[in-house]
Image 1 (spheres, rainbow, N blue to C red):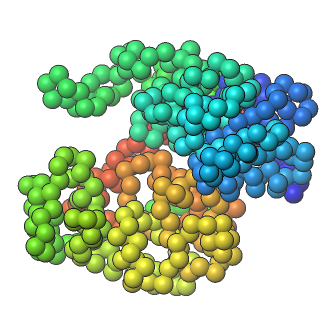
Image 2: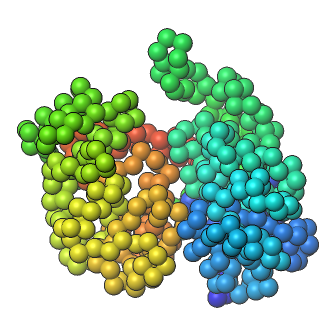
Image 3: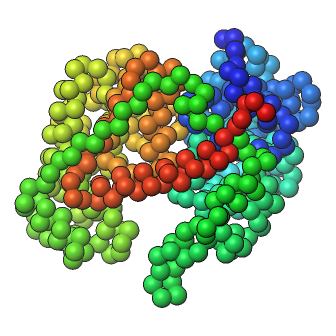
Length: 448
């Protein structure tokens, strides 16, 4: 296919070419893969500035997106790649192939660097979903930092750079510039830009930015960062957000409130307890959805309020395809038991969905959140169970609301009134405000 780039795509490619370190904050659907591949082609096969590139990405994106993009565009002909996934033997065989690009999933970064026994001889690294390196304690972060000085060029790609707030940015930019802009140590970064927020005596549970911290952080990273929102550069269809509330019965409400208050609940002769706040949060989410795991991971049914609402929404779609995002396995089981549905997991599933042959598709945000193009198959997304992760939330929404979508996208959220669902929605909106401020502050000016 002939590549006729948008002006913003040409700008972004040129930015990568002229900046050995670059953070490209591209809203979902703006074509970050082809933008980056165009730059790699120039650097590798035209100007000969690099010899070999390592692309690190989520597993599904490794298998579905990058190879497909390389094969898709005429101007990339001659650019070779090898996909290093599968068993250890298969990964080693792929990495030993002579190719311009080696593609590996992020879970195997530590293995590649510390366990494979192969030399790390890449002069360019592309991190697709830079937010995957937001934890400075993660093994993948520590491993990549060991070889970072060997890399001449590095590109970080993401649409969700600060999904949990500005604290995420330190590790992401440490990987890119080795601490030049935000400091070499997380403690220094935290002390300079943040102050304790929620605490219990000397124990600090969370931090909030000091006055003026956001602007200063953005200023420091602005020289290597460009930001683009799809709504600024593409003719995007309208996106309608809708909240569908369901109400628990008095008996269901009593069970929910008992667990929330006492951290223990007897349900159908089985005792359910929450050992800590994190466990309680998960169990309350399950109860809001309609079931809860007891002993031995057995799901105990509580209510069908969300299933009834889902049925109404599917009927209201009047035959148009509907995509349903679920979170727990018991959500999946109960939805499959009640409706004729198909989970979107394989390449064949994706093709059939986009061909319009799946009336109701199911996706899990953690496995379908990044890089999948599902906009051809439908324009309605229903969140049966919510997630605290802004990154997964936005990425899942962007499977339908993206370039190429021809219809108005409608995103429904089924929310159980008076439960943790309401807190999750509030948190997602709050986090989005912080992230939007970052993207706005670093927005690319194509007039420059």
